[in-house]
Amino acid sequence: MATPSNEFLHKLEQRRDGIRATGEAMLMEIRSQGRETLTEGESIRLQQMQADLRGLNEHIAEYRGELERSVIPAHLARLSLNQQTTSRTKMNNHADARDLVYRRGDHNRSWCRDLIRLSLNLDSDGESRARLTSHAQQVIDHPAFMEHRDLSRVDGSGGYAVPPAWLMNQYIELARPGRAFANLVQRQPLPGGTDSINIPKVLTGTSTAIQTADNTPVTDVDLTDTYINAPVRTISGQQGVAIQLLDQSPIAFDDLVFRDLIADYASQLDKQCLYGSGTNGQVLGVNNTPNIGTIAVSTVDIQGVYSAIANAIQLVHTTRFQPPEVVVMHPRRWGWFLALLDNQQRPLFLPDANRPYNAAGILEDVASQQVVGSIQGLPVVTDPNIATTSGAGTEDIVYVLRASDVVLWESGIRARVLPETKAQNLTVLLQLFGYLAFSAARYPQSIVEITGLTAPAW
Image (cartoon, rainbow, N blue to C red; front, side, top):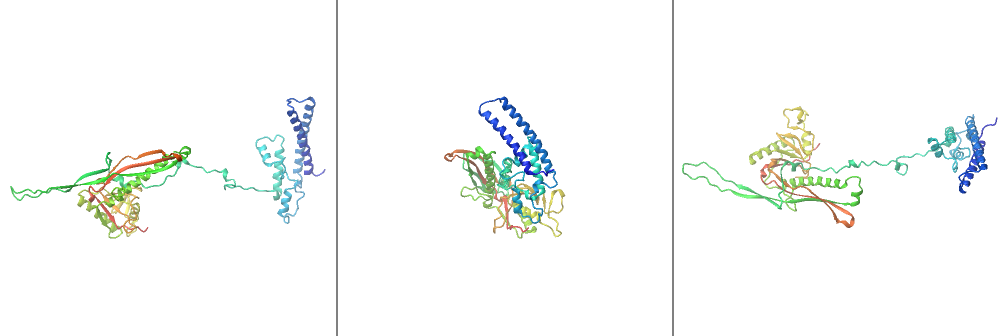
């Protein structure tokens, strides 16, 4: 029996392709004539061609099986047996030979088309499966027929098929400090119809004394008065936004802009309460209020700072004659307190849950911009708006104060949307503003600044 060969298999396939092409041409001719039925002769010819195709398909499938079962695969017959000396160039030349199942320029056979037909159960005659099986065997038998196309997630090399997932509902907003100090003081609604608030104040008071004897003059001292003034100031901000951005964004972008404006408004208001200069449209903040108390630490260690806080507390007691209510400091200074250790390497500020004895302070909560602990019986509030560039340029100030003596008048925050301002550019102006007045001058002796606190070394 002759050894099966690819040449004979090709001849069988060409004969089958020729019969199929003849039948298709006949059907196209009938359709071009506008006919929907076949003549008797055409019907007989078509039936004969279908029978011939079925026979050829069976013959081709049987012959292909014999070819695959051959001891020496036909598609390797022309390859050199000494693979150690065969160059890759020669292998690639063989990969273009006619004995390959899939060849360059052969439009009648397509690996992708065969794979699709097999996957979708359209391979009724089994030809696609047979070709894929033969091709797989060729790749296994000799690496010269192996070809790779590696794709990655790099854009242009398959990466565009892996799009990024935009989590728009998790839009990351800008981190901004709040208004911790401003929330501590006495807050009142801003009166309408005015641009300045005046509060009368007793400057020097009356006097009493012991009457030296009956019918002798009684001490008579006239009081004097003055007033404090708190001008009404404005904090405002705006953002121009293209109408297209508002219309086409999948999120409420105007809401995001207003939230950011409000967050910065709160931070600016807090800084005004602390450091407002009283000029150029600013309120007069605590730091610039005349006659507030000031104590400089002797040394930047637990003894020096702890003593300065005790001194500040007694100063409020002895000048305001009322107790202070809170200690306010930068988070950096509170972190420094928490890092302090005694001579036995034990922390001086301990968690409240431990109910410590002989602690310099208590850590009540790992929080931000609120009560975080206590020192000398007073709650400690951290405020990141406290400057760390005071004094010599590296200092942060600790405030001991009776917060209820300090007053902040503020209006509600107002928002406006102005489409007309930049209508020629299809730009909408998102605007936010509010009014405030502030005074720490009612009882300046209620506030004591502790200075000289240089940057800690961690």
